[in-house]
Image 1 (cartoon, rainbow, N blue to C red):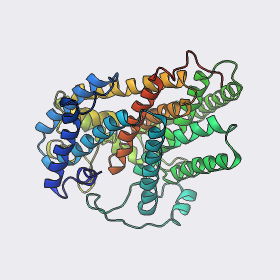
Image 2: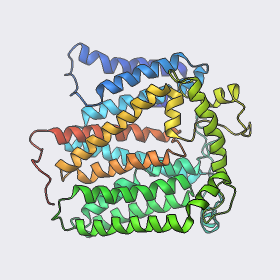
Image 3: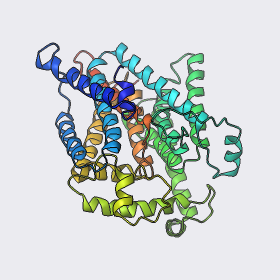
Image 4: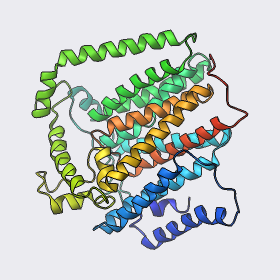
Length: 420
């Protein structure tokens, strides 16, 4: 906890940030080296994570913008430490639930601050009328610029909770007491309502996709004789049919036309921001071709793209990220870094699927986190969670790792998926 403020706001007090780096490195390396604690249990992603750390070091060395890189590197370093700590500290049910509670409270705090200080957008008339009634308090925190939260960032943070809430609601709707079901339903509906209010099209797309994927995952994991499976099959069929009908109602020609001319009006407002993204992506891809092995330097996109490329975007608009999580990984860490990142996500999804199949107790959380990972990367096709709230990503990775450890305990593994 001592290191948290220094690594979240590294440029505010650089000496404290350096001390925090050294302290965490000592905490990670000295106890195993001197056998003060046993080595952590091996994980399927250990070698990939080690290779990714090497790529992070290279990306730090090649940067031309040390201040930007320090800000990004400190957040990544803090995140990896949290991931590893939770992976070894929450290997029993009670500590894991405590960590999950902290994850929920932290996200609730971030989302609450976002609602209070969001610079709400006016894309859809009825929704804009509702957001106009919300408070707009500019909360100034060191390292956060003018304190305004972008609704897209609020939507991205919500996506780390909505699939999990829906998954737990699906699993426990028939088994929990009335007051517990009411609380679950209220939390789930409130989070979903705030996602709608953000008017983030990438957030909406990812939210709908996460619910569809969640239903498919639950349908696939439940045994054929489970009483809820028929309902889930009907739901998944209805979702699929609605998607097909929507696609043909809009039409491929209309979709192609919107891609070529995003300024057209639609039911969810004009897609002008798509044109901005197209221009940005074009030059980010060129940048990735120019720096395929090392990347451009961690977190330095906003300076490098203006310095080296004739990007046709208002000079006053801050290009802090690539508006695509995969392109962002590529320019930060190089092509190898992007491959390692995709492999890490794939391994985490396999760990969650194994847990969901083998443990009915942990199934709602495993499927909820799996849908969350998929939702974030659908959201990541058009946006990147590039704020202090991305701390929730690393906590989620730690919870997934410790959940896999809980599932791997010999006394708790079921020989086959249960029917309940």
